[in-house]
Length: 135
Image (cartoon, rainbow, N blue to C red; front, side, top):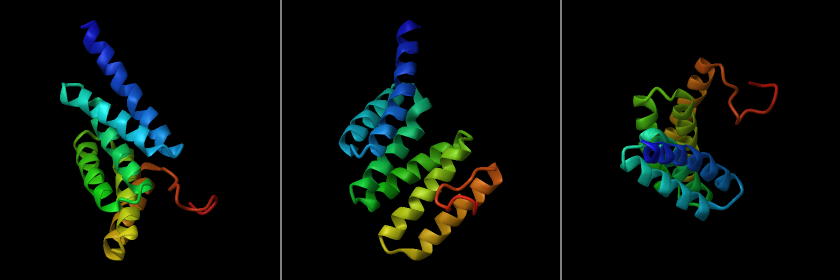
């Protein structure tokens, strides 16, 4: 039981650390940390899997790989929706919209960004992409 608790704690720690690495511009470190969280998820500690896949998508976007990001966003979104993680689902929709935009697919970009905005509104969250005071 102690070993399981250690792995659970580690996976919960790795995802935010990976997200911070993306924000700091270190996509390689983010990928490594998110991959470790996914390894833990595959061994039965699934709590960080959706977040880890989201971080992988964000790292892909930062490295100019929007097509790869879309795959990770879709996987993270599926997990987020099945687990009731609606704020993460909104973030996945938003990220996918930005990835579609980078690929020049304005129709899918508009659809994904619209879903993100609607979910943010439903959750009472301010959409981070809107200028302050306009949300």
